[in-house]
Image (cartoon, rainbow, N blue to C red):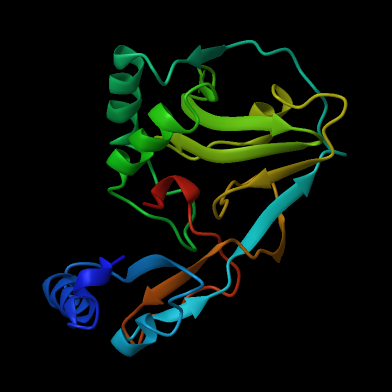
Length: 212
């Protein structure tokens, strides 16, 4: 946000023009999140607003299982953070529909400041998961792995008898589930600038841990 003393001088527009010029040929697309007070600004630069969707599954086909092979990591511990960063640098994309790569540093912000008590190493699956149960919902914020995994065995180790649904804060691409999608209206709106030939999927959720 521009300081009041410097508004009306075209500084924001100049910055947007510079960023687009420097990076539009170096990536597949450009995206940003904007609060609802400036929704008319970004379309001037070729950005379009997109409605994200939330993906979820019920728990009817899942049964709680012992948490064998689960080790909790500490987002406040420097050794654990180093391990997570190195692990994430080799990760595969969460989905073939829409995912972000090269965002390890943003992930580390979430690990150390937001989900520092909700990080688990799944030794059997060779994966790291960020998740937390709140009331009757298990929120899955990220799944970091070097190869495709089946997610049901992982989820079964974290659900309880009161869990009614599992909510994914990204576009899931796991082979053993077929999640439903529903409307999602966050405080900030996702804007994306794409080449004309690039078609985005009808239903997607930008990964939360890649959101700066």
